[in-house]
Structures are given as structure tokens and as C-alpha cells.
Length: 533
Ligand code: ADP
Ligand code: MG
Image (tube, rainbow, N blue to C red; front, side, top):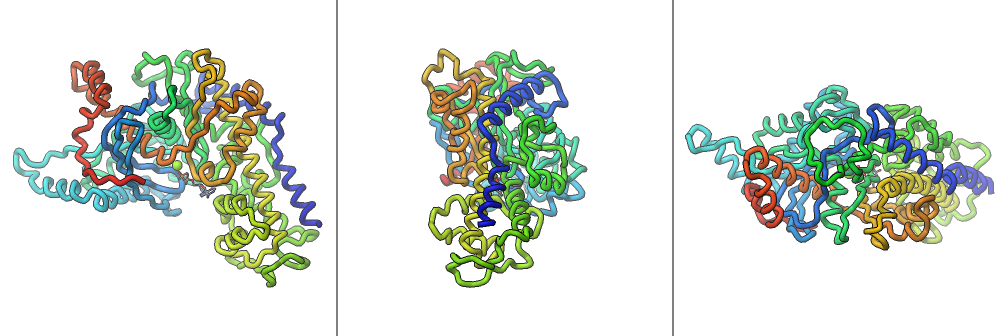
């Protein structure tokens, strides 16, 4: 019984009540407003210079890369102009040592090499053709260094964006730490390495994954009004939403089109409430904080996203294990251990290592509805080298994991709810009874069973939203969002380039929009065999 009581005591500490949600929403709105007025606030509210979202008619072929935090993805995308697309991609895990490399060149060189591999593998003909043309470089009508692929670069770290393909890194997050890169233009860093390998690729657009998600959702969503928010719940968490220009009181340095009266704002909400006015803190949050490489920063993210939830779980498990009054993972008096053997924790178990428990196992626990939790107990063996855990142990872990993720989902609802309220869309007479669309992406929201339902539950009790309005809020998964979103922004970039070289840009743009922008993108000579995933 001691284990059950102790588990209950832990679970209760992760409770985030309706009242807590409402207080936090008010504070989120306050910090949003503060971030719209000045620099140096906890919510950075970064202007993206993107002033409109797609409507699904956009066409063309593009490349996109996505440096997320855990993975690096390289893709080529064909936008079909009818809300659909086809996409081919490769995905690699970023080697841990490159996340803390001495020089930026080491990381970006690795990325360029992955782009080369992708081209060889999926676009071999174009790649070979480009190589052959390079050999004719000495003849007058021979090779000129014409880029063939326009590429959108999804870079999901805080960046001060100063142009559509230019932005300097403000700080690393999510376990990355390469001081050499801070303050540098990340597009230039990547282009330099691409050029060293003589790849026919041009970094045309710099995209935050949240903005990409918002763009992609607007492209694919069949709704009348597009999306208002793109949100990520992956390694980290962040959101970008459509704000009225009249609410943006900070100076805007770059050029932008003000005809729409709105601009996409990258909130950088991972650092919401770094001052801990409303965020909850348990002893395990504090312990995680002590072991983190950026104490005092990304305080919201540390309670919400994939990189951290597994670590919070690990810290609670260790406490239970070390508690002399509780039998946990010791199999001393486990009457239900149907596996019939003594519980063994390998010395090499992730339980003993900081960051050794992947959040993915929390989804496994939640998904296992069997009375014996045998699938989950198998994962404990495979992934954590905890052998023959008793059923009570597995139940305890599952309950605590659920409490940690439930708190995360309710905190996610705080950001989403505040932004829905901020946009005023619920009370817009034009949208009476219409759905309010939100695009989400990231492994946590994609794979944790019921994550979106828990967000919805919290939205129902949010002042200013309520049960009826919560039903109008559609939270849709945007799979492959970063690739499609980056392609869409590369398309905007292509149009902007035309603006520089074409006297009649407006006429051009009009006809491009009418024709689904296909004219602009004919140059992109990708092969046709893009497969649909
Ligand atoms: P990125 O952040 O690099 O774009 P993802 O969206 O895949 O990548 O997020 C990776 C994060 O999600 C990691 O922190 C990982 O622990 C977590 N994660 C991976 N799989 C799952 C899962 N099945 N359930 C919950 N979290 C997961
Ligand atoms: Mg991602």
C-alpha cells in the first residue's frame, strides 16, 4: 500500500487546477502584450515579416531541411495547388557530439553532407546532370553557378530574422551549445557548407518550425479561414500566430507588405514566465533545473516538451526507488509479479543517467490498456533495462507519467487558449459558429494518446472560451508541416526575388497567383518521381 500512497502523493503535486489554468492564461496574455511592446521580455514575440498565409492554391517544387532539436530532415516537396502535396524525405538523428561542437562549421558541414546524400539518393539524375555541367565550366556557354533547387531552411531555435533568408542566432536551446554560432547568420553558415560541396542548392528562406506549421496547416486545411496558430510539441515547444499589425508596438526594421494588416509573430513561448509568476514547480522540476545547461531559461518548455518530460519522470522514479519506506522496483513483496522473477535494474539502465529516460516511453505506458501492462513492462525491459518489473511498479510509473503529461497538456492549453483569446476570433461576427483552426506538430502531441483531448478539457474551463467555444477550436495535426511550410516560404521568397528583378512585379504576382504560382517555379528542375508518404 505504501507504494500506492506515495504514488498518489507524487501525482497530486503535478495537479494544475482549473484555477491555476485561468491565472496562467491571464499572465500569458500580459506577457504577450509586453513582448509586443518591447525587446528583452520573456515572451520574445519575434516579428517574422510573413504577412499572409497560403490558401492551398500554391504550386511548385522545392527542397526543405529541418533542424528540429533531435532530428535533421531533408525533403523535396511538390505542392500540387489543390491543398495536396507529395513529399520525399530522409531523416537522421543529430549526433550528440555535434550539438556541443567547438565550431559552427562542424554542425553545418554535417547538415550539408546530409543534403548531398539526399540529392544523390532521390534526385540522382539532377545531381549527375549538375556534376556534368560543372565540367563544362571553362566554355562560355557552359556551367554557371546557377542554383537549381530553392530550399527552405527550418531552423527551430530563437533567431533574430532580418530578411527572408537571413537571421542571426540569438541563443541555443534544447541541449545545443555551440557558442561559435551565436550571433551569426545561420543561412550563410549553411550556404557556405553547401557551396564547399558544390551542391546545386540555394538557401532561399529561413523558417521557424512554428511558422512552417502554420503555413502548412493553412495550405492543407480545407476550412474557409485558414489557421490562426501553428504550435510545436516536440523536443521543445513554441508557437507562431497571426497578430494584428496595430497590436505590434515594437519597431520593425525590415521591409514588409502592410496591406493585410497582420503579421505572423513567433512567440518563443518556451520562455514564457521565466520569472515563475504562475508556472508550477515541484521538487523534481527544481532538480531538473539544477542539471540543465540553461538554468533560468525556457522554464515553460521545461514543463511541457518532449526533451524534459522523460527526465521529470526519471527523477520521480529515482526518488521512489531510493525511498526506504516504499517497495518500488525491488520486488520484495510483489504478489502480482506474474513474470515470477526478481526485478533487476541493469547498472547501465537509463534510470541512473541524467536524460536517460525518453519521453516516448510515457506514450507506451499510456497506450497500454491491458490489465497486466505487459507491453509497457516489455518497454521497460527493452528501453530502460528494468527487468521483470512488478505490475504495481508499472502501474505506479504509468500513473506518474500520466500526471506529468497531463500537467504539460494543461500548460499547453494555457498558451493556446491565451492566443485564441488574443486574436479575438471567437467573437468575430464573421466567424459566428465557424471552426477556429490550429495546426500542431511534434512527436509528443502526435504520439501521446489523448494529448489533444487533455488540451481541449482545459480550454473548456478557460474564462473567455468556455465549453461551447472550446468545441469550435479545431486542433489538427500537421504532419510533414516543417517541410511543406518551408517550401511555401521558399515560394514567397521566389516571388520576392522576382520583385527585385521585374518592373511589373505586381502584374506578375497577380498572374502567378492565378496560375497557382507555377510560372515562378519552373526553374526548379526536380525529377517527377517524388513519392507520397
Ligand atoms: P524535433 O523536435 O527534432 O522536430 P520530434 O517532433 O520528433 O523532433 O520530437 C522529438 C521529441 O519527442 C524527443 O524529445 C522525444 O523524447 C519525444 N518523443 C519521441 N517519440 C515520442 C513518443 N512516441 N511519445 C512522446 N514523446 C516522444
Ligand atoms: Mg520538429
